[in-house]
Amino acid sequence: MNVFESARRAAAEVAALGIEQINRVLVHTADNIVAATDTLMAANDRDVAAMSPTNPMVDRLRLTPERIRAIADDMCSVATLPSPVGEVMEQWTRPNGMTITRRRVPLGVVGVIYEARPNVTFDVFALCLKTNNACVLKGGSDAYQTNLAAIEVIRRSLAECGVTVDAATLLGCERSHTEQLLRAVGQVDVVIPRGSASLIRYVRENALVPVIETGAGVVHTYFDSEGDVAVAAAIVNNAKTRRVSVCNALDCLVVHRSRLGDLPEVCARLAESRVVIYADSESYAALAGHYPEELLQVATEDSFGTEFLDYKMSIRTVESTEQALQHIARYSSGHSEAIVTTNSHTAEMFCSRVDAACVYVNVSTAFTDGGQFGFGAEIGISTQKLHARGPMALRELTTYKYIITGNGQTRN
Image 1: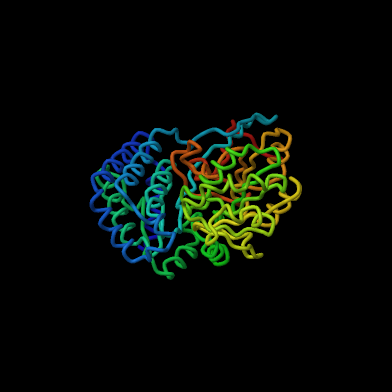
Image 2: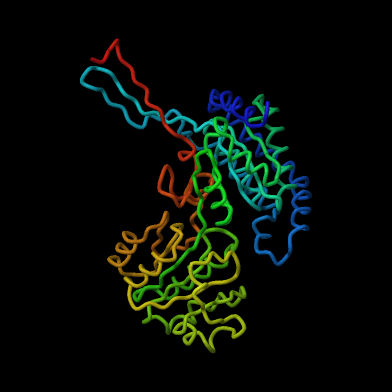
């Protein structure tokens, strides 16, 4: 029996688990994660040592005792959440007396392909188990040692709680393992890629099983003519520098021409983090002499529509909100977009017109995260429009079935 057949068999067992047993597994796993901190750190140190220290992905890869504790806390949070499985979404009775019920059910076997994010191993397991799904995980080579240590903790916890260890499976890190997962028709119900645009494109173009895309995050913040300077400065700094390697990080500041005089104040704190700014001609002139010369560069066309995942940001000057919307429509990946304004009409227009999974008004885009939305954790951020959009968590790991009951009805 191959790993996918084992996962399919495990999915049937997991589907029958009660919520109390699932929650016990999650809490027990969280305890084991904390207990295994030294083991997880040692494995992670090996992965980090193999990556170039200048690679911004190191931040995503690195575990600390604090991050491990946060992972365990997130798992406990998932245990406290209500499960959507079994929820009656709709119910109605037809004229012939038969009753139709639409009820949430697990997807079955969920495959997730991801890169240097070892926390994803734990998050996916927690969310899948909570929704009575089995999971097949395919992490990247950069985090393989950490993922091996993580899956050992997970499978040991499952066994100690009397649940099949095949509820969570980690594949090898070779490209061939990705191909096997993408071709596991009839054994894997859905594949969710988390990572770079190239990874997502590869999965989309090669998968034979259904795919839920989590898109790249080309993120904009528009500083409107009626925006508050202090609010803009705080949001831009937070969205850009909090964690540059995540998909909700700011890539392009769009600024109304009337606010160019405020640009030095808005960008001042970025210099503390050594953020390189690629500015168009007008914003370059506004920042020249106010922003470190070695960090200020002239923007090219390639500066826009780029997910930097680094301490880099572009600036585009516009003459109106309409022009800002046009720029965002051209370059957005549909992930997260923000506006800084005190004008409620402008804010409403921005929210209505911007085509993105998450649209913010006077809030940092750093909040595009399942945990921050109150979901406990997340599978990823979907930028597509079918099945799921935005942070995906428990509900997005379910589908539904129709239950039809009656008393002998037949159709003419």
